[in-house]
Image (tube, rainbow, N blue to C red; front, side, top):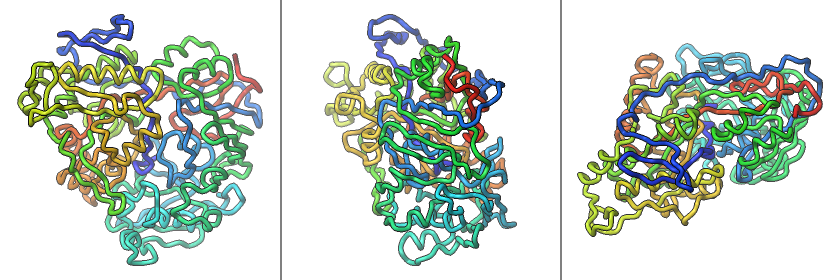
Length: 593
């Protein structure tokens, strides 16, 4: 998945209520001390080790046409926008993985290869990529997947009537796309189709074309052609009867709750090992019990759930450090969806020293080590730690509340009336409104920990509406720049393409902080330039960009994480990191209990 496939994920993190002394003590609601943190030990570097296998170990003979129960661990219904060009939430992507897919696959270095449903060739000038779809790749209704279907996806995303978020910097680099988007022309000049072939030409050579920067998710043009582009997202053909070309077909959808799949016998890689799959939403608090009883075969689990699951005899735990990171974002402006422009016009959180002070006030190292048992660790930048382009030389913001207080003093946020709470720069009451979402039973505790840590440095931080927000409502508020929000806590599931412009470009819908910075824009452009085919040049560009984001603090990166899954012992050939659902099998009719 590229940065164009970025998906928002629930911050499923064990959290805690806190009060602070000179050395911060983090405690639970009964004031039982859990960890004690010291500022002088909070600066050790991250060490990433592979603590878990990624593939199931079951070697028994598979049974044909078995059934698997897959758990979606979330406390909120899935939205059901079941198309790669339109969805935004991680729950919907978990459904999509069973019945639809990219035309191109990637190798272990996250570069495109020729093992997928299509092969590709690059032109000598690195401006044109040509995909050739294999002859036996078919939609679930039997129609062949053609170049026109991928072309249609480009026309949908480029349309001024498009309701999604993937008309981004790299999409705009397609030759003729901007002219089509503004209505100047009727056709995108850079896209040529010849049956199973499609060529996409870009304005200039772009190294991301080889690592996920090309949109490779077709849309069934014949099936969807009668639906207006503006109506696609809400249509029954997307939400109730979606069609893909993946290993399973959608049989039935219970909106927000469950999806039943049956094997696609005509799948281009061959008939799947499983005959059917049921995906069902399960409350995170009940996920471990569900795999223990055999109700579920596979379910992703959070760090606190791992310590419930690790002693179960009927499952194995798989895991790896993924491309996700949690963060606290500052709302610095607003986005105009009509003009697709961002204005950094919110002065409340504009002071860099204020943002830096809030970053130094919280102790993510101790949270990761003591609360998550090492399954979370501090995020020092906004490019994931597993990326080749991650800048490990940036220290991040280790706990240093004395520095926080000095920064606030220097900036002019002073407690003028002696009540322990700082006023704003004009001496007025200063309250910061914090939006956070439900994740698991501990989410409120972590939120309160952050609030109390900020209270320790004299900042009055209050939850928006006095409570945690439901996942979908939370992102509606964040996306629409609800004026009630000053800061928010969220997470990104990033992708293999190192280009971060999908989140950070000033004209991107996903730039939720609404941070605009000329040097950032220049560096983002440089990272996609022909010069960036030079590996050292590109790495230097992204190192400087990460340092700039660190210094300007539009977000506070908080935690990187292990992705974890509990899999019943009857599951065979499940590769958690590189899942091919057509290969997954079961070796018994019923779950091991």
